[in-house]
Amino acid sequence: MKKSVANHFEDFFKENNYILLKNYLYNYLLRKTAVENNLKHDKPELILEVGSGISPVMTKTHHIIYTDLSFTAIQFLRYTHRKGLYVVADGTKLPFKADVFSHTICSEVLEHIPDDMAAIQELARVMKPVGRLIITFPHRKFYFAIDDRFVGHYRRYEILEMENKLKEYGLKPISIKKILGPLEKATMCVVVICFSMIQKLRPQESKTEKTEKIQNNKFMKLISFLFKWANLFYMWFVWLDAIIMPRNFSTVLLMKCTLQDKPKQQVINKRNIPL
Image (tube, rainbow, N blue to C red):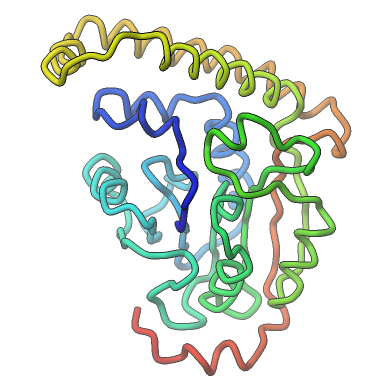
């Protein structure tokens, strides 16, 4: 996706041995579970996931196309995942014909795009009539803080604001689910502060030292084991917090939408874009 603001966590996940740890993060696991549960009773024909990066939220089907602006991310995902198809693409200029996908997924992406309306328009354009869109997004503007800036967010959304943006392109929410709550927000703020301090205080390592450290299999196995189980354990506290807290305090929401009134002009303008 278009991003002019740096995501500093990506510095940590540049090395292949560390990349896999990203898929154990508790908040990613909760988003992934929520998206897959919302598709459980549907019968998707072909799914598009926009902005999948190296951590797609829909992994239980071969009938899917993953897209991301990063060639490196798509290359890595293709090598590790090996399901579906993979396309390097800008979410505001998708290289597909109109009316192609029965389902589209856009999880934690719109907030990273300067022109989020262009991305919503593209999501609606490539969907079949009466198709389904699943999006997750950071909720409540008053939550915007150090963690948002750290990962390159341009904004957070209010529910009515998101509904109005979707409505402009014929998308109507049919359900809204809570995914994350205040505990996750507090956790990420603490993590970002600690991560920033460590980055500043740790001595600069040469490329040789970094390579030797990362290639230490015993070290990586220990880190992976601890990281994985700590996140799986903590995930249940965050899930419970999201369930208990009122929706007004939710920090991430999931909207499932149906495409009802697709603007005719939007289809005519981009009818010739190939799949």
